[in-house]
Image (tube, rainbow, N blue to C red; front, side, top):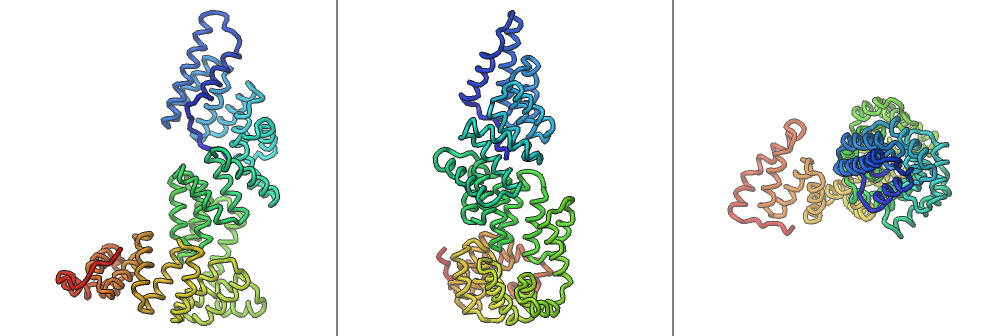
Length: 473
């Protein structure tokens, strides 16, 4: 896992530069000395451009420095970093290898080359380099982060991952960890299903580096595990904005789309992946089966195989509207088989709402909220249950949260407007109704738009007469 490729000007780099020339053969004449000085100046200009993010200029300076003084390992390493950032991995690999030829015991060059080889799938050579680097420098954060990436990619067993996690945790506790170390720690925590820890570590990364794609994808994965597709998709957006669209961003976005009922869009996205993983193949099969599945056939299937979790889950969701009482039973059975899977409990609660068992639904969703307070699906269902129970003051808190987190949600503004209206808070009701009308879909929300338009004159009059009150926010 190669970390931030930008260069920090510091005493270490200056020391390495001076050391390189101190160890170089003494110049035989004034012209050689001038070439050496010129190389140093060009290298420092490259450092300046690299810091400013001008990678083509930095690369140009590093290459001119190497023309002036070919045996300059620091320039080769920084040239490799610039090439890698410019998406030229073949040339970057050559630069890192050349740096190691010039200084074979240099752990920085070892860890950079090892990190790149991990990304390129050359695991055997990468492991040798990274192991050598760590033998020479046990505190080499780049090497330990790259080793963690290697172990994850090669599906190391739990004991190996836990040993690595302990080392990464010691970095994050005793020294100032790099973004690469924190990202590696979050990735291992996620693999070990320590989701709360993974989320906390990944958020720490994003605080340091908002454009860190790896950390945003970890946050997306956790949000989707918590059945919050909108939040998950926002993290996928952040990851894609930080770089290019990848197979992993496509997979996670497809998961979010599937949760939102947009299976056709999800399928199109998944089928655009040129080298689908086993997980992607399973998703494609599940979506296609779900589109054509006969619910009666699925019920017959769970009669034959009562612990078919896939069939139970589909029945939990598929029967929620047409037969919520049956859906409740299938959700309950799925939850019994997988008690730690939050989606089953959410499905059970949503079926209770559909069955108009609002009191039970409210109690359940209150409990689920203590587990996943940022889950929008839980909030929406809890708000709906409280609304139907006419517990408007409590419902207000849920719908306000939804409008703040999902400002594009017309439904949230619609219900929040009614809540304010019912509570006599006409100033807020008026503003909320107006926002609903601004973002509502003319076709999909046609009936609700008509209801709001009919109610608006009365709310405007009550607001002007100051018969209402503003809510306490």
